[in-house]
Length: 290
Image (cartoon, rainbow, N blue to C red):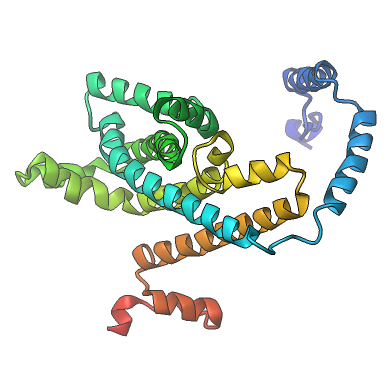
């Protein structure tokens, strides 16, 4: 019997008091904050009763009369706002993201660009929409402006972080061939981040579809204004019809995003993606079809 076998067995789960104190402090803060916000069990139970009465007045959804035309008009405007805002946001975010990348740009360029990105991400799109409504008046232009600001804040930040994670060997190889700065970006940087950049853009389009239905609440166009008016009239069956239509629009946007990713990232054609989604588990490559 050696000395190691006589030693006391090691506790696999040692007590870490700083962690326990941290969790207790977090629990205490949650309880204190709930008390400050008057979050009580009685209010929660009474709220469930109100929710039951609210939901009972929403069914069945009302698509009749001129309501369907109002929904289609609002959703069409929301879709237009989302697509235009995403396109403009992508175009502006590309150079800002490049300037923000600290491995490509000097500090005197990257820091101001990062401050601009942080400014764009500081406020919710509804708050920015209120500012644009005050500036340009009610309508879709205010909604487009608000969503462009949000798109710049999101896409530029993630695009810059993606560039900072690339391998500089490929960049140096292109630079060593005597290529210009634009060619270095085209052949050394963008091929390494194109997939992630496309993912950011498709996600932002999906996000803008959701946000374009909200900015209308403050008068920035889209179906949000119709939804807010229906709430004010206590027209809850029409509210449910609008909500169902918004959910359908989001699902369609999700499908379009998957198609874009399949075409650009998986190198599949649209017909191949549809065929695979319907039945076949085999990925059909564009090159194989040719």
